[in-house]
Figure 1 (tube, rainbow, N blue to C red):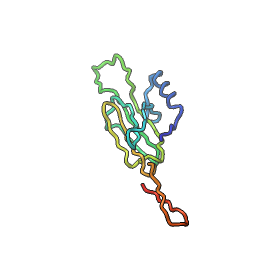
Figure 2 (cartoon, one colour):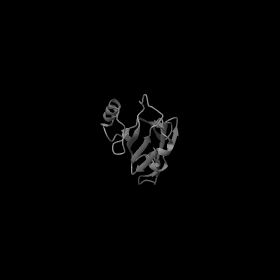
Figure 3 (cartoon, rainbow, N blue to C red):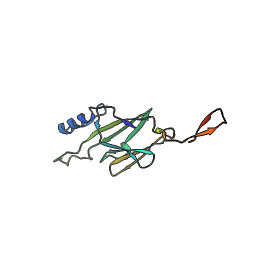
Figure 4 (cartoon, rainbow, N blue to C red):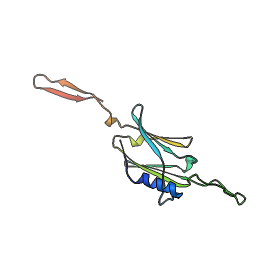
Length: 148
């Protein structure tokens, strides 16, 4: 139901981690994610965004392209603070996911808890299995009727 859009994204993420570079608006860092079919009729996508406030998370859907962007800024510092160690990645993070036509992009729900953004995307009614019953019209054959 989900399609990868950039096979080199993981390679970019590893290079950025090793080089210590931060994402920018023109070249954002990739955010890790999990995607799975949840119990029932929905897909779930979970993005790791620790240290990001919900106010700076931007979620867009255009046609079937889901885009999530966020920015993690450095902690507020003043002139008396001297940074001794800085390992947490900062900057802009982004991820694009191509959604299948069988997902209902009009009813996406988003929750943010403990640094994880979770999107729940219902499966569209037209994509759910349905029973087809066969009716009888006499000796000329059968008539098929689709019931949802």
